[in-house]
Each structure stands twice: as structure tokens, then as C-alpha cells.
Length: 315
Ligand SMILES: [Zn+2]
Image 1 (cartoon, rainbow, N blue to C red):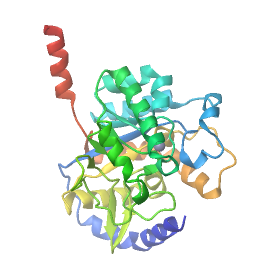
Image 2 (image 1 turned 45 degrees about the vertical axis):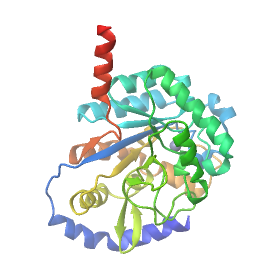
Image 3 (image 1 turned 120 degrees about the vertical axis):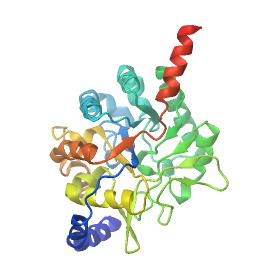
Image 4 (image 1 turned 90 degrees about the vertical axis):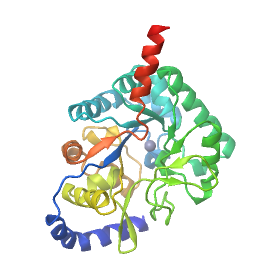
């Protein structure tokens, strides 16, 4: 919570100055950024986990089909392919949704099975949950899952062991480390862009931050995308592409475009603010983002898929 206030303070003080700087830079760029969608329902989020455990999930009205359909259509309209990190529980309950995402050309990644924070699990529990989710996803699409995103970015300094388990389970990359100071997640000081560890083969795609006077600001999705005006997000993302010549990793959840979702009672004020703030504005902003930047999935294997389908037909 303290981290949020620091970030808010720094960003609002500097936004006017930077907006002026932005006006002098208004050119398009060709960098392909990474679009990622974490497929979970409104009752799966970590902020509500003490109110709703997995045992109660079935008693909530799911809104995942409608919300994901809206995102799929928005992506189709701009001809964008993305990485969808799907919860194993969702895939098992809605296998046709998973097939639909895959058949529309998107990469399928893993967002765990039960959306439990890694630092609340033992290495054995983490391995079991991840293996189960990966198996479900692979059985439904018939295609290997290469990427992992932890529930609430819970790969922290204390849970780096999770990367070794991911490697053991055959994952090629992880996209879970947030290089910021935050009450629930983050590794302050972690590299801000794609990182190859010296002692591991798994590659990390950290959630993107903007470095402003020594502070990493989260500017590339989720609650931050909803909280700040769109021009603010656009300005920082453009600077990352143009000045640093780096792609950014953007992330969104299907419930973030759904202002009509039921309100979960019993969570703290900050959690409710983070979850429900500006839901009405997300769809419009997301559409603008898709027009203003170029995107790709983290691993784009569409060509390989076509080849394997063709060879399957021939044999
Ligand atoms: Zn999640």
C-alpha cells in the first residue's frame, strides 16, 4: 500500500512536465510490443481470496465467456495476436473458450490452476498446481505451453525457486516479475526488459515499468492503466519504444472491461479501489492502445502450427 502512494505522488507531480515533453514527440514507431491477457474471472483475483476460496468459485455467476469474447473481438479488429495466460480451472470448466482463443491464432500460456500466490505455497504444492494447469491446457489445445505468469506476479526474491520448477516442467519463459516496490509483489531492481539469467535457461519477460528519476513506475496495464489518463500511459509507452528502443509487456484481465460485474463485499478499501476503479473506461482505452502501438504474442508460433497441420493432412 505504501508503494502505491509513493508511485501516485511521484507520477502526479511529474505528469504535467512530461506531457509537455510528449507534445514534441509524436511519431509512430514499428516496435512489436507484447500483448498479454490473464484469463481469470472477477472472483479469482488475489485481493478477494480471503473472502472467496476455490471451494466457493462455482457459486458465482461466471462472466468470463462474455468478457473474453469482447477482448477477442477487439484484438481481431486490429489484427493483433496476443498471449493469453489462462487459469487451469477456467480451461477445465470452459474448454471451448480455450479452443476459441487458440483457434483465433493466440498463444496459450499458463496462469496456474487455482490462482494461489506462490509465496503461500511449498515448492511441491507449486509444482503440483502448475503441472496440473499445464496438462489441462495442453490436452485441450494439443499444443505445448511455453509461458507462465504467476498469480499476482508472485515471483519475488523469496520465490525464485519457482523458476527452476518451471524450467523442469518444460516452460521456456516466465512473465511474472514486476520490478517495483509493492506491498504484495515485485523485485525492486530487477532488469526492466527481457532477461536471460546466467544460470537458468528460462527467460524472463518482466512486467514493464518506466524509469523516472530512479523510480520504476508501473505503466503497462491493469490497475495502473485504469487509474491514469490514457495520454499518460501512451506517453510513457512511447518513450520506452522510441527512446529505449525496447518492446513493452502490456497486460489486461477480462474482468477489467466489465463495469457490470457483481461487487465483492468484505475486502479492504484499497483492494476495492484497485479492482473497481475506472472499469467503464477500459474498453475505450484498450481500443486506442491497440491502434497506437503494434503488438505480438510473446511466442508467435502461428507459422509452426500451420506447418504441423499441413504435414498432418499429408501423412
Ligand atoms: Zn491473475
